[in-house]
Length: 439
Image (tube, rainbow, N blue to C red; front, side, top):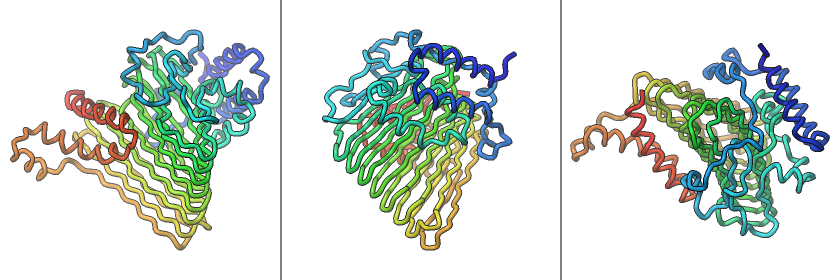
């Protein structure tokens, strides 16, 4: 039986044969280097400190295969419509490959590029090669290296200096449910000086199935830019989702990241922000809903590399059934990052006695003139609040749902894309009800 390293080496060779002339490109040289690094690193185990609460043995022990572009499932517009955002520039991918017939990316401001990574490698190769695989830590993380090795498609967005995009750019990755599919989207978002844009990533399952989404998103915020980055992870309950989002902020930029995670059997999201110039501000918000035996893990890192920067972080989790939540939030304040203002909060609501939360907020401060706070709470619904609502005519389930939704809404209301916020509210109501009846 092949080892996993041999399995992915064989899959890579098959992929390479399908590339024809592109196999000689600089981009493919990056892929080959990443595959070598992946085989050196291997998959992490619970012996690794960063993974001690998240056992990825079901991922590392299963042979997943990339889905060739010519074999992607046909999904109709009627099936996809509920996942699209009205009034948005929608890029739709099926099993990791761009589908133009389901997308609408016209009527963009002059100079703006919104396209698939595959098209960008053909049409904008100089710009792509200068930025591709430059930020996410492929030399340190095996999942980033594996993504880089098999990255053929994803979203490429370039917003030039001074441009404001009024409607959100929505990147929708839909999984057909193909058995043991490897789906490796690679997204690169480049936002210029004083530009403004809302970017939305959605990961959904059209059909249930055991598959593996391994995604990397790199976002560069230019000087004075304003960006909202929203992500919805609603994968199949039998699937695995491991993601790395790496954000680099330049002077006086403002980035807000909102992550809503409800799907997957094992789901791990890593968000890293580097405040790389003075006056930059980042806000990280997250909400996880898990039930049954789901494991949802959120790791965040905010690197205050320069002085006079702010970061604000609020991550919440609602756990039911026998689910398991993990939060590890790190804030680094470098030696020269004086006048840093950083606040981190993690709150967990346990709806059952068998749900488990592991939380580890961390501060590492090497500067002396800073204002930094962090805290974590884990608890259940307040009995007095339930009693109050029941005294006003609600039954027990209605009272529990109202309080639970209010806990979640604190994060959802921070999503400024109105149509997405409405979708999230409906989704959360449905998931809270499903959690009550799912074992």
